[in-house]
Image 1 (cartoon, rainbow, N blue to C red):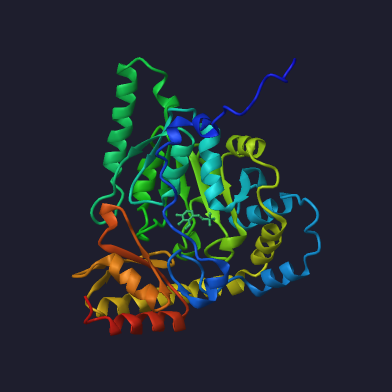
Image 2: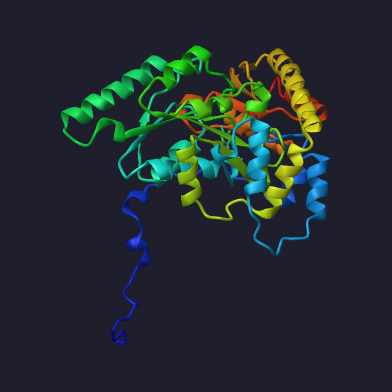
Length: 379
Ligand SMILES: Cc1ncc(COP(=O)(O)O)c(C=O)c1O
């Protein structure tokens, strides 16, 4: 073929971009640059205030193989032992974020749908849009509890609609239901009865247990006997390894095998593998920190409630969603930022009156509470 007459001068690459991404909403939070991390008390991203375990830090310092590609099977086996399932159910990922994407990619054809229950973790919708999927939105109730009846109805209506329009088989279209348990941003848990009702639906239930270690409850060991359940977990929260990006799922064997087949081979890097394996050998230390965070959460919740302008919701995670009364939530966030404390405020109308505050160390929480006390008379 003679290519000499073909010039690329007229090609505008922007015109070749996917049209369905033209109004794609980016992830809404900016992250703090590394150089600024020591300047702030960071309570905005539900991180672990106590950091990684000493064993993880020591293992990273000793690591000498960054010039090699490293296999993931030892980490998978360690996770399988930690969770209590066979290794064939485990896939590791670049944070839980990536496993949300991979789960969608192996199930969703363009036009298939997921159920999302906002306010929820925004990456479910982010990846659904990126994967060309539809989002069936079933909002939580005013108290942030999941409206299981409304989910059942939405799935029933979807099936009827598809049947009426004579499209494909109903089951092949609305495929995945995403729910975090505990939930982000509010920290609430599904009741066991609600979980059973959801598992009885003709969809795959993706239960995101990013904060399970704080709640002390998990459905992970149910996966081998529950064909429509996938559980997502991470080392970001309980193990304090957020920036090393190690997540995983516990999935039915056939689903896990498909994800393993379709994912990039080195999706978790060697530092993440080394640190996560060392964390699993330092459970006493890390679970001690989890208990401290839970105790701090309860103490902080009481102190915030006493201020008079914050109403913290009960939480089973490492953060507190607080209703801001009589003042603007985003102005409160900005005022704290000026004092070197980062918390989360939200753009969505449903959460406009709320801020989310991660539980810090006792010292950080004390600094936060005294900053807020000084602001009692501000508006
Ligand atoms: C509910 C939920 N799922 C998943 C994640 C992502 O975790 P990771 O850091 O492992 O990507 C988060 C992070 O905040 C989260 O809140």
